[in-house]
Length: 214
Image 1: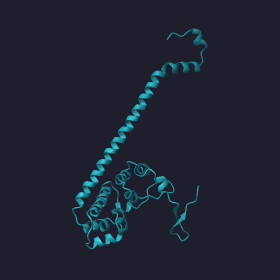
Image 2 (image 1 turned 30 degrees about the vertical axis):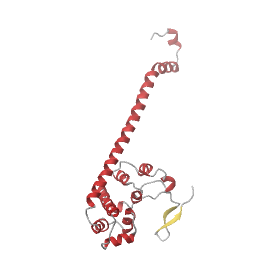
Image 3 (image 1 turned 180 degrees about the vertical axis):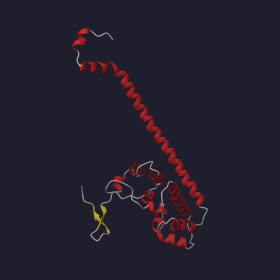
Image 4 (image 1 turned 90 degrees about the vertical axis):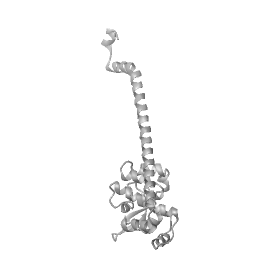
């Protein structure tokens, strides 16, 4: 570009930057648009990959559960409570029955096909957690997830909400708990907030107290 000498002599640094920006803006704008489109594509690809992985994991859980369901109900209960250390209460809640029903099964009582599959699915889930290097999966399921103050949510609670694949994502560090809850229970911040918190009482034992309003 031919620039008049008088302009060069009298031009300031701001003039030079402004003129350069004007000359480069079409290319810069095009580059930014390309970057935005590439970012959108990357997000779409990550979302599609995650969905595919989640579908594969769900299928894996069901396949493993079907294999375990070949065993008897008492055998499945022994695996969950004696071998894995799952409590009777949690076992009953996660399968969707009463504790008395679980005790009846232990003595050889009849269980529905759905209940038998539920026990098998829970056992398969604990196997998968162990494969993800989670030591003592049954105990890990009882540990509160790292969430903002006011929320005490454990993997076992997420299991009750149907978030089996989400639990695996947390265990493998692919997603954080808030992200999983946003996907499985969009209104969790309002629905699952507790008005109480666990504190240490003067006698050194844990106690519940109402949370101080902010």
